[in-house]
Image (cartoon, rainbow, N blue to C red; front, side, top):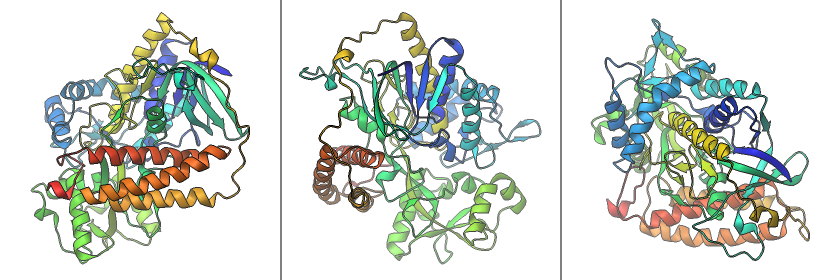
Length: 523
């Protein structure tokens, strides 16, 4: 058994900012950050557009940002949470600037971009790799903190709670978290790591679908293991599909063409060059993501084309190359010159609005368990996230969760009686899986089913079929899990099955279309 004061699961903006905060204020507190890949691999790293924050108070104000957020969320947001996050934004932004994150400037002021759903220019950015720059600065700060230990290639299998105590009847209203069972991939050993406070910051679940803008690590792990521990999870029916991912014939992670490109003037066209967004929304290319994604999906279904085009040919080339160098170079590497031809784009699973229920302090329904970021339902996003509000959410809730955690750590009122009865991980009687093809096959089956039946446009019939197919896949994965020695691949598959089940069930409970959720039977 390994002991720490604070266990942070995930090394993106949420987990790192939270850990740094506690480290600075409580230097004697032992903080352990575990992440299942390299320490810099996270959804944060791939955030291109930027961070939404009001800095230009002559043209913009908090109320405009609040209104834009609630409009994008189709009124399903918690207005108190939206107000809190928007008004806290400048303080939290200044903090990461102090930690070393650099943002583009023009004439001594922060350069501000605009994305779909925003009524003013308020997106601070670092070229088109803002998340990468924030991740760099936070990691550097964390590495220089003597009381923070970062453990890459450590994969969380399950939380330690009373449901691991043999023979104990579980009171779902009084669950405590004591840490987690964690697989050290390099030593091939499952460790019991205990903690007074545990933070889940595991990001999204994009790989529940065939095509996603998310990195390969985004398999909904945190949501799945919190749900298995009987923590409250909601709004899983709301999955945002980014309208413009670079088209590829290969499944998996697609390269994101930032919404900021459309904010700077790019236009959507059919494959043969005709504009179409005017048919769907007066804001055209700057409508919210759910509207643009459904419009593209409808055009593709109507024409039978595999993609639509993003037209950058009339844009200022010098400005484009300065703001979007990463996108420009990626297009060139794919044989596409964005100033001579349309960029082929398709919608792809991008951001999950639902997840682990938390309050304003990031506390989940399980005691001593906090959660921050895309793995949560914080109330900020409602039924659809406003572009560039996600990095902001990680910073504000990471701050609040750190403050509340420090209060609990200073009170030091932790009861570990049940922990003594939780056993070490036992693999006796299990065998090494000799055919990883079973995991690969079942994962593809799940992703195909979700992409075909539970995607941008759903229907009652599709959801009922998905429910039956999901049950078959779930039973097959359960059998594999019960007799095999655990691997990250098998555990990820188990988590994808849990998350897809929640998406299907909560979609079936919907009776009207809201934000990113669209059932054609309710149209």
